[in-house]
Amino acid sequence: MNTLNSLAEFSRIHCISICAFLVPANLVATFLTLRFSFIQASTRQMLPIVAIASTLALALFLHVGTWFIVGVIMPPTFILCGLGLTCLVVNYIALVHRQKVYEALQMVRLMLRASNS
Image (cartoon, rainbow, N blue to C red; front, side, top):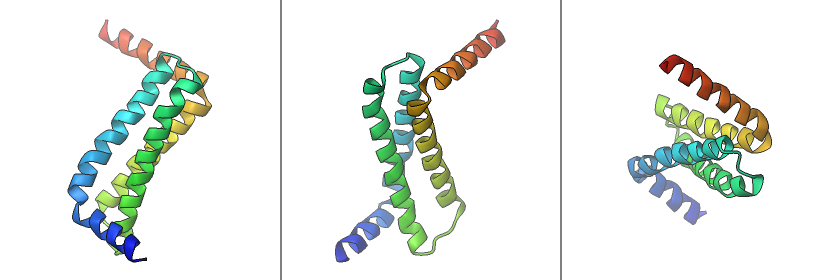
């Protein structure tokens, strides 16, 4: 139990540094998942990046959970939870419904091309 308390305290003390790493890492990893979907990579190719992205999102949940445990209920904690949840959902959908995600990304690409011309 002492180890968990020490980890939670470490998480709260180094909050800015942890968030400065986890937020961009989550966004980049989720973007890579979408990029792999866009180029129609196989499930075998997508699985490692989805695993990394999901691990980063879970790490963000654990970090925010340390703040919930001590009673810090503020907008940033909910925003970070929303970011983690969004990343988890996007990665799950990109892995399970690959063809639908590919089609949606192609539609976005066509809309962007039409708006630029």
